[in-house]
Amino acid sequence: MKVSSNVKNPAFGAKLLSQWRCNSSVDNSARNITIVKLENHEYPLAEKFVNMVDKTLEGSITNDIFIDALKAIKKLLESGEKVLKKTRVLLALYNDKLCGILVANIPKKDKTGNLVYSSRHNCAKNETELDWLATWSPNKDEKIKGIGKAILGEYYKTLENDNFKDVYVRSELPENSFAQYFYESMGFNIIAPRRQLWCAKNANKAMIKDECEGLEYDKIIPMLAEKTNIKEIYDKISKSMCRQEFVDKSVNIKELIKI
Image 1 (tube, one colour):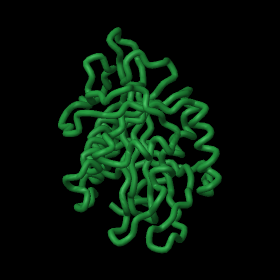
Image 2 (cartoon, helix red, strand yellow):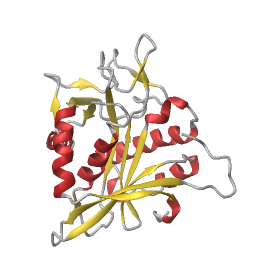
Image 3 (spheres, one colour):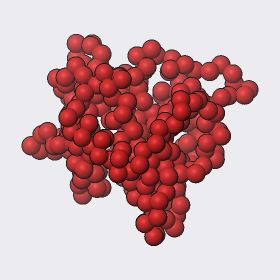
Image 4 (cartoon, one colour):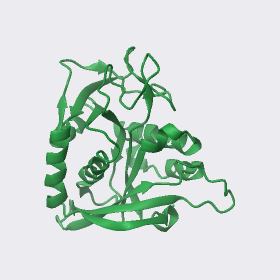
């Protein structure tokens, strides 16, 4: 990932990846969600994202995750580290409105100093982590069903090229959100018999941020999606949600999002 030095006229690069068909909660009619990948990372763009948090999310667990995801993105934008070449920042858009953010594959170090991509203790070499995922309705009077599946499904598409097989996630507790049930529908399984603290003493630590800083949700449900389940889920939802891949093209992010 590169940091542009053109301060006067910054080009916020993004790559159009795909379009997924979701549905409106009002009349179940189709709503097309576009997934893009941030390319040329810029700190000012993340600053504008912070100001886009909807007031209706304030005080909720969704807002906490959204803000922490933005903090992670800021670190990515500021960093020129070569180890971040596999880190993925995906955005979900409806028309010109941002409605989802996914941050994954943030590099970490285990206790021996080896580079890994999952915070799980003794993780497999080809295991990575879904670090942050948040979605919300782009319109106050309408919910769009399937945004989370679309952005996570597109992330699944990137795993093989990045040489990852399994994906670890620290899901919120079921009493705080429906995250656990969502992840189960996307091929994840619970891998620990009991709840765990978000920042376990033996967890691998992220290289670019303090993942414990400012977190109010101190316990998680550890879950893992394995390669076979990932492929099965991706094949299923990419067909049912009519995924269409865009021609390989990079665009200025300001042409896509109203900010």
